Length: 474
Image (cartoon, rainbow, N blue to C red; front, side):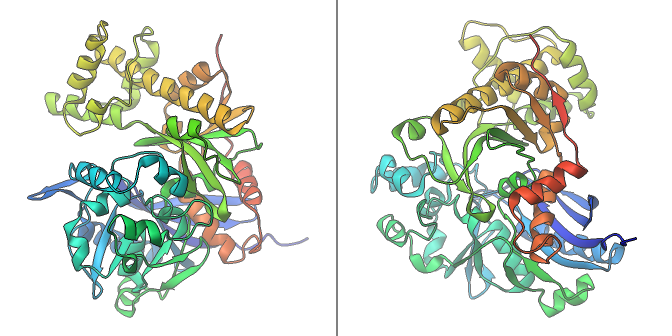
């Protein structure tokens, strides 16, 4: 009898806009599972000059958690890092000049004006394929006076990899969100950078998912308890998540749902039409050169900000599962535009949503369960609109939606999305981002063969993490 293949272990660092985690991923045969080692808070911090990320605290959390991961699982072979996109740190002589700015900082409006004064948005779209988002890295850089003093720009996952290894590289999936990568050949657009006043020397060498970035600095290897390599994964968290999206057929759409909802399809070539540009569809790179043709939709951040306001009013925490259960039983209600600019900043979200609804001549629900249902239904409608647009723009006849990430736990959201799209929704895996991170590391280590396709990796996910199916109701 052939013995089962050995189980191998990898560490996944997964940093989101509201929290970070370090996970141990174990892979072998039909086994693919995760053990959470640590979870820690993350979020914007207000400084004199605006909103920032507390990168030093994040780095310390990650290093401590990696030490705990090695203590629990000495067989860990490598480390992979994924985070949110667009935000960056600036280095000079290996020192971080200042805390990275947060993408919701108001300074980005100046950058938009500065960039569009030099190149029209239509021309930008033809070069980088990105939808207009005011916080895209090139707009941030155009408003960043510190850039003149820097010698290297590193996006957040690359900045953390530099802290761990000393290497200065840019992983390609996340680099594609900066607006400075050409959509056709996926290389830095040096001519564009020079045209908008960004020094090309700031842009580091590009690496692919699966490449080795470097080994831990000796002092950190001693602190963590192992001399480990850091492997490039899909360092944009959505790129890692889509690796673990089952996508059982080429006509499957995906929704990676957390703070944001990334709604789209996977393509081999860009769709740079005027219709795609007008609809706000973007071309971000995925693992193995795939294109994530998607639209950014405000996700469960609207609900979490609403709950945060209610908890501040009550002086006590709210049982979110109980609230969603009550919301599912509430009567159908009015909808609002989840993309309205008035909802983009932190603050009293319930009051701003109510004002938006009243401006349309409607009245929002007066109870919290009904209000929560209104939020979830409005997010689902935005998802449905984006799914239909993705199908029309790409010429796909879609047959299912894979809803992955934390939103897969929200049964009301999954059912509303199925109802409003008329398509079955396959919910899960919840931890798609960390699973995708681990799968790319495992492939690089030869677990599946280094030439294993994305479809083979996704088959492992389907065998080990069966999704929950939501069927459209009449």
